[in-house]
Length: 392
Image (cartoon, rainbow, N blue to C red; front, side, top):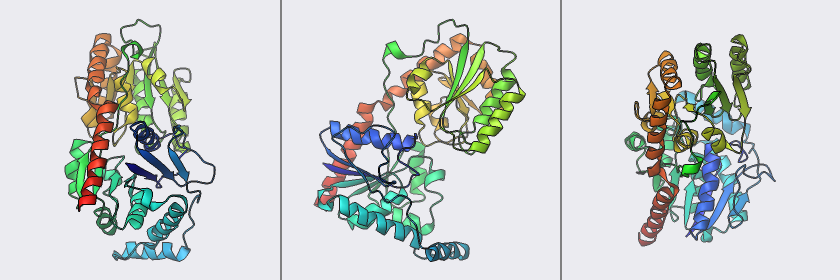
């Protein structure tokens, strides 16, 4: 099976983010399973993925960088939006044509059995190239509200031409079906299986205990300020606890706001921003609680990795995906609001036995997302799509 993994709708393939990580992991895994994989992205020349592709992956950076669209196309797009005119999006069309031409200069189309598109922009290119002769799967890496609902009516009609749309949670299937007229399948992300020797030792008595958060620092989705405020409210009562934040800065002003709260509560030595790490699992297993105040997620790699090393968790019950992964009162807590988030965090901070119990349950729950199971589902889907297309 010759697979083209295409990922064009991102700022840079060098980002330390979930989609880019899955892109690399999928390419590497299908090579290990004996398939041919083209991993295709568009960035400025010379830029490579942050995560490492193994040598047998046929990695292709189209090298166009940020595509400059004629200004008249942007004006036409905004006029059509304002007047609710269902006209061809010339901006999308222009970018698609440029990417498709670059693709054909680098990759023989007759060598591709199937396209796996990492978002809608990549689908447009694959659709332009395939003329419905090559099957196309489109992945949704976040919630339906974030990824499909914002599409225009025209874009949804285009998206419905894909052979399959893949979503990350069972509850997303029916949501997606209401918006798209194509086959929707549920395949979650993988979660690493952690050896017993490398899980968090929550029974260990420590001088200092640690709450950890991993995620891009910004206020719309990840909302670290909620966690910092919660910790500040509890800090005097629990002086032997610290908070560590990991991840890239997505919003500098938001980071400054967080810094201001830390300074105002004199917590500079107890709330530490650690930045990007290549050793996230090591950081997780040295911690005691994973706190996750996101407003929404698709299938959080950070949350599930924390659960895989046996950490109890706290999140919000209204957050898509978080509400499915955290089972309230079993492997963590779900809060209705910010006050309850603080209260639930305290319940875990003051009760070691509860942390141990929830952590063990979290780790057990992650077994159904093991790499062998999830990649097997992907392989089965792709093989059957190729077979169905050849018989059509």
